[in-house]
Image 1: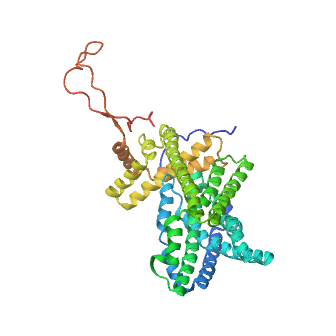
Image 2 (image 1 turned 180 degrees about the horizontal axis):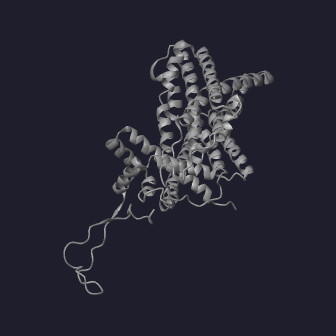
Image 3 (image 1 turned 30 degrees about the vertical axis):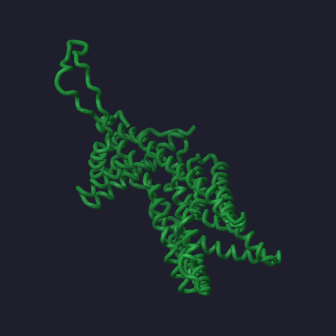
Length: 453
């Protein structure tokens, strides 16, 4: 059983007992290819090159006018999907750079891999079987799910390996996988809608009866969540693996693979729905896709509520140690209280203060999750270092955050009415319980009681 370190003692000052940050000696002796700016530069160059190539390929297939029409229509669901995944991530919001990478990977690198690999595989099958129609069917139902889900899963794998501090559970896996798939669907929709517009231009069809309108209805209106839904299964596998202890290597390896296989299977069923008869698409949509979407939505929201409960459970010990004030565990475990604290900070102290409060909330949440993993025996080797770093970040922002969170705790604490006392004297020497007005209601949670959480 892993040794669980004691809670840090009360700090003596802004830097008292807090770590000054990770040691940087290894960075000074690192080779040039190990430096952060070199890795970032190589990654950005790779994504930019993939973006230029995919742009050229899509424009070549759709034409300039079709590309612009497809681009304008395909971008419509993107803000809604990104906002939905960001909302799910509000308890412990990950860095925007991770989401930007995920979206760029899906829209550029994964889409390029899919176009090249799917085209090559379909042509090879058509040549080997001398049956182009069966090659298209096999490519859509077998090759495309394997290639596309593997390409999208690569982004989740990279962030799981190189951004482990930001990848701590199921919600993180869902958000990263969903944003990656949103980027992929954006590029794919641009291609399909652009080709549909080109078909309408050749046939002269216009209006609601056009191929463009039908494609838009199916891909953007009815199933904008299709690709995110598939890839989210992979993200859940990585999220559960992130919750597992390091020593359970087999489990950490098999769970993401199981999620990937489920994503491929669901993708294959969806792509093959057009081969199930005249109403196959609607049957799969109603009997399979919608229930799966509802179930996964429930799972993610339930997981988010569990995260808030973890915050309320783990942080009171830091109150006893002097790092947090009594109202903070309650306020940090309520999304409404966190929002009120940010709004109060912006109204009283300005936008910079609101950002500090938001950062304070994020660091405190990370601290609660870190402590929870340690209590369950899943702590990483750098547990103590990471805990000190988070406490140091909280201590730096305490002057602004504490009064705002105290205000939010008072504003959101539930009020429970106290029953009116009996109209006769109580026990003992007979207090004046039967006269005057009954006592006023009192908060069920007192932000000044250190023993409540």
